[in-house]
Amino acid sequence: MENSRYRWSTIILEIVAVLIALVFLVPFYFLVSNSLKKYADILLDSAALPNPWTFDNFTRAWEIMKFPASFMNSFLITVTSIIGLAIICSMCAYRMVRHPSKYNNILFMVFVAAMVIPFQSIMIPLMKVAATFGLTNSIWGLWVCYMGFGSSLTIFLYHGFVKSIPVEIEESATVDGCSPYGVFWRIVFPLLKPMTATIIILNSLWIWNDFLLPNLMLGEANRTIPLSTYSFFGQYTKQWDLALAGLVMGVLPILVFFLTLQRHIIEGITAGSVKG
Figure (tube, rainbow, N blue to C red):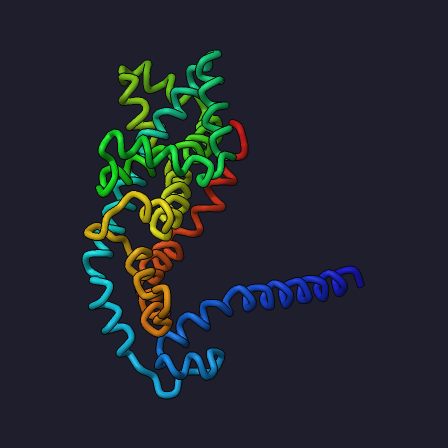
């Protein structure tokens, strides 16, 4: 009888989970279906299926957005930022864990505290500092900002994961003649793979879809995909048909990337939550 109740309760929970998942998929339905409609059809009934289907929106959005250039800017900024964050922050977290000291503990607490500071509160001072050092209107300047804003969470996640790695492995490598850098790059960093995958996914989603910081830092010539999509919204006109097509093209690469690596998120966070 208990097994029967358990099975029924499991079925009910699964049905509820499926219904919740469908609710979260509704925005994607509106996005894709309306990107295949003419502007008048979107205003007439945005919930209806496209009839007839039209791909002219994608062709026009591709040209107006200068999609290849915008894509390369977004790709370059995202890839270089996550590589820099993974390398620098993993080394920083490893040093803090393996060489605990008063200063390292204070520094770690500073990084953790920085996670709760909203970007809007430092937005104006940031722009003044960036302008002073000539970091505005350049991809390099935006990269520096992403390195700063992404370091706190990345170090925090790596810090927890490094604790789960047995120190005896590193001691054995040292006895065998491995240098400190060799221990990290040959032994420790490969063991950080699950957390590195998690960090790559989280930072990629954030940087690829970010609008506010690129809008402040970049000029017209270095527009990312979110900035190019925003060009369809003016003071008096909103080109929903082209904007939705642009959003589909912009979301598709990062969505495929996320679905490919998303299994590592739970694996990395679970492994990092247990101290070895």
